[in-house]
Image 1 (cartoon, rainbow, N blue to C red):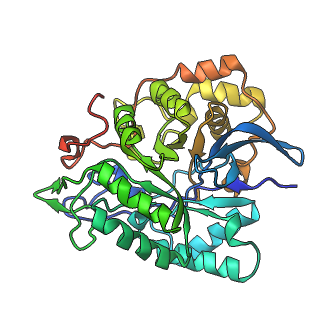
Image 2 (cartoon, helix red, strand yellow):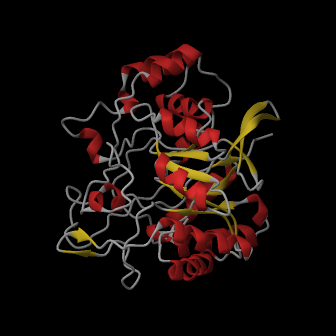
Length: 372
C-alpha cells in the first residue's frame, strides 16, 4: 500500500515589474512562483501504513492528519510552465500518492491549478476531502475575503483547508498589483497583521476555510498574535535548512503546538544567491551531506528531507521532474542517527537564501528579520 504523500511541485515564473527586469535584479521572492507545495502537518504519533512507518502531522484545529511529505532537487530554469505541463506534473504527483497542495494568488496560476483539480475530481479518481489545499496575500481587512473568494473561484473549490498570511508585512493594494512600487521601493501599508488575522478568523467562522496560519513570522510576532487571537495559528511557514536551523523558533513553535513548515528545505539549489561569492557551498554539494547520503545509499536531497522530518518539521521542496517526485518520496525506509542529525545541525551558519532586504522591505515596521 502506497502511503499518501504531500507535494510541492514548483513552477518558477520570472516576473518583470518596475526595476525588476533581469534575473540579476529580480528578488528571489518574486521569482519563485509555484504551482503547488506539499504541506506536511506535524502530529506527535507514528502511523503504520502498509510496510511504511509514517510520521503524522496534525493542525491545531484537529483537521486532517497527513503523513510527512514533499519533493525537489532540480535546478530548473526561470520559467512559467504552460497549462499542459502543470496538468502533467499534477498527474504524476497524484499517481505517486501526493495529496496536499499549496496554491497562491501570488503565483498567478490558480486558474490552471483549478482546472487540473476539476479534471481529476471529475474523473472520480479521488475525492475533495482527499486533497489539502492552501494561501493568502492581501492584508487590509476589507480585502481579505474578496481576495480569498477570488482564489476559491479560480481553484474551482468551495473551501480551502489552510489559509496562510504570506508575511507579517502588508503592502498597498493598488489594483491587485502583486508588489506595488514607487521609485524602486515597495509601497508599505500600515495594516496591523493582527487585524488581518481577525479577518481570516471570520473565514473560519463562515466555513470557507478549515484552518488559518502564518508565514515568515518571528517569535515576538507569534507571541503577540497568540496573545490577541481568537483562533490559534495552525502553522508558520519559514525558511529552514541545515544552513538556517533556527532552533529557538523551532522550539517555540513546538511548545505552542504550531506546525513549522520549511520552505527552501534543500537550501534553494536553483536560487542564484546560492552561487554568490560569500555564500556557503550549495547544500546538495556539501561533503557532510554527501557522506551521510552515501552511508545510507540515499541521495543528498533524501537525507535533507529526512533531516527535517526527524526534527518534526513539515517540508516543502520543489520539482517538476517526475523521477524526483517519486524518488523524494522514498525517505521512510531509513533513519538518520543522532550523531548524523548533530552533524547536519552543525552546518548552521544563519544563512538565509531568500533575500528579504530588498526594495525597502527592511524598513517596514513589521519586517520580521530585523535582528539578523
